[in-house]
Length: 164
Image 1 (cartoon, helix red, strand yellow):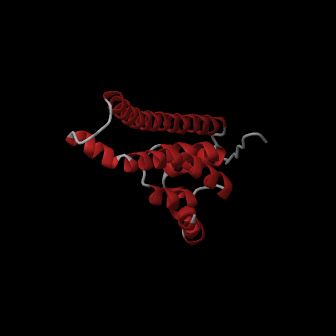
Image 2 (tube, one colour; image 1 turned 180 degrees about the vertical axis):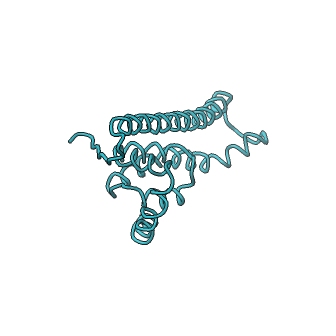
Image 3 (tube, helix red, strand yellow; image 1 turned 90 degrees about the horizontal axis):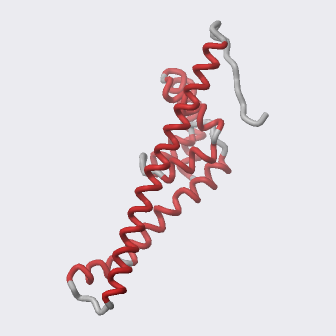
């Protein structure tokens, strides 16, 4: 949260004035985040595209309210955190099992390795699905923006807002 507030108060004006206006990709991302705050943050947190610290700074300069940021970050970081805890708690078991120094039954060994494989597989699948959904949201927003631009060829700015 500290990185979010630092970036929000120190960099947001500069980013809005110089970068978002200059780069269409940032404008598109900004629009997607504005319209789908919780969903986009959740998808970004589930997908290890960008390290968390860098993502904190990037999200803070986008049109994002703090509450959706905080809740989606908490929920989205939970699977990765649980994976790290699981791997850390089983590190000794992994080295023992790999070295053959275990007193587990064959069934316990199979369950351990299957559980570890499924945990890693689930993390990879969730990451893949999150990236795909985020790409879909960006493409949808680009299509909407293109439609709005073609409806208003004079270059007039039209603001859209979901639900209202």
